[in-house]
Amino acid sequence: MSIAAEPSPTPFGRLLTAMVTPFDANGSVDLELAGRLALHLVEEGSDGIVVCGTTGESPTLSWEEQGRLLVAVREAVGSRAKVLAGTGSNCTSEAVAATAHAADAGADGALVVVPYYNKPPQAGLEAHFRAVSEAAPSLPLMLYNVPGRTGSSLSPATVARLMDCPNVISFKAASGTTDEVTQLRLTCGSRLAVYSGDDALTLPMLSVGAVGVVSVVSHVAGRQMKTLIDAFLSGRHCEALAQHEALLPVCKALFATTNPIPVKAALELSGWPVGAPRLPLVPLDPAMRAALSDTLAALRPT
Figure (cartoon, rainbow, N blue to C red):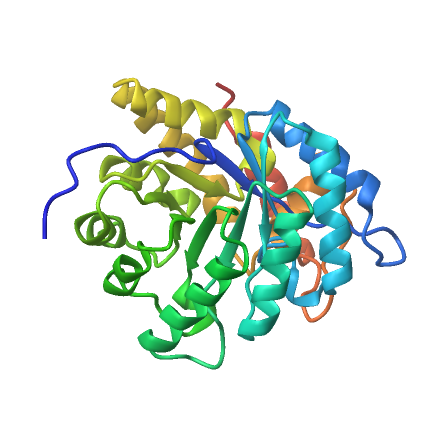
């Protein structure tokens, strides 16, 4: 085992937004608004957009809806930002098909979550991700570990074995600990680009080798999050710390209940009519919405 002394590459930039899926008044996907929102996020500092992830309510989107969303966002942002498609499933054949489709539809990468609910062992996780990798060998993959949602955790040792897949190049770390970043760098080396999957841990994770964040907060504070990242990387650590502290209340507010319930409310409060989440998620309750409004109003500008 050797320490990864070299910095990791940034295949998708530093700031990626895990974008919500807008719904119209009838509950249908609003593709026009999705395109406008994606372009707005890029203008506010996002280097990349992730469509159809957990924040995008992928569990309640059909594969057809997901395909149309990817095309709409790709067309909206053009070459101004990277576009990643969430293609994960707890059925390997579905993840394989979705990833191959994303490659054909022009995605710059795929975010592939650890299979949820059926809790495969590490050997099963390795076989799953190998199958996905082989289905679209030219499409860069970001493996996504979020054990709080999936019930399983992808170990750094398993990721290290997957590094012989040329398109396994990045990892979204959402286990809630900076130690995951360190263990990944120790076992996989600097070729693996690790992104924070938790807005509140962006600064701590950058300090131990993460290259950026897949963010929810950037829906409403993209410029501030980009400033935090840029300040840290430029050695302006006090400025980065000040941004971290300024953003922490909104980080907490946007995860006060199940994501993406609060961020959809935050967008509504910010003038983006993205609609309510689909059942079984429900709109933010009035008391939490009022508190969220106060938090957004108090967010310090940069």
